[in-house]
Amino acid sequence: MGAAGSKLEKALGDQFPEGERYFGLENFGNTCYCNSVLQALYFCVPFREQLLDYYSNNKNLADGDENLLTCLADLFVQISSQKKKTGVIAPKRFVQRLKKQNEIFRSYMHQDAHEFLNYLLNELVDILEKEASAAKSDQETSSPTEKIANGPTSVQANGVKKEPLVTWVHKNFQGILTNETKCLRCETVTARDETFLDLSLDIEQNSSITSCLKNFSSTETLNAEDKFFCDKCCSLQEAQKRMKIKKPPHILVIHLKRFKYIEQLGRYKKLSYRVVFPLELKLSNTVEDADAEYSLFAVVVHVGSGPNHGHYVSLVKSHNHWLFFDDENVEMIDESAVQTFFGSAQEYSSNTDHGYILFYERVSNGSTS
Image (tube, rainbow, N blue to C red; front, side, top):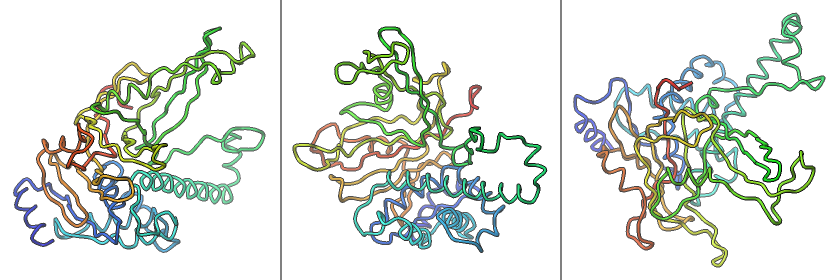
């Protein structure tokens, strides 16, 4: 890796970003699903900064019980504090902890990068929520007067709903969808909100992220056996249903559903469809009228023709340069190379490197919260 590392340093030359580190991650037998997602998260700068802040403010936690959050923070600190600018790091503690905690990731079989990302973000949220409620109960035990001063809002008794805690993971990744159902008889609209940390989109051949998002928000008619029970009509009625993005997240993670269960085959098949993902994305199907603008900063790529074997790599944008991370190897790539990962226009193509998880960051503009 020394040679590859110095090659990267040579390629960047004077443009090597001050204080930045580009390190490959060692593969412990089919752990590329983990490495590719970890690189995307490391170069999600707001997430990285908040994780490093969390680590510096909670150094005493390192002496406590180890969990996925402390292992991830340790890994990010290890990378960011390296004396060298490039090299290889072994995320051994993190991978061991992951396998210890979830048997799905214990085997040496090919794992799903999206499943891992989903598990990791939800696990981090759980740990932070537990820590916050433990800190709160300690505070309330030590100062009962404050508890009374705060009134019943923080208490779940008496049917008062406790406000859900918003962690820094939520602040980065969480958005809100609204599920609108309109009764076609009385025209009453029922809306139900739900949160998301990533959006999973169905894909079609020769399409784009914009068209996939339009399909995601398209109107569906509920009739025949699927009629909707309207509270106002007190009966089952035909209705129209649609899903809209009510609150776009700061970091928009889009998962392209490339693995589809084919009934006739009795197994999953990889869809190698060509789906164009732009470097700059406008979200127009939001409840707020203003378009939310996003910039692509990472892509987790699935390499291979089937769902049960293959490899994961990631493309990352850092300080206006694009980098290609393949386990231990890191190299610079041209921005134009990103489009070679859109997918294949023909069913049987020699190109099996397809964009699978896309990471977009909201661009600061007037409408950014």
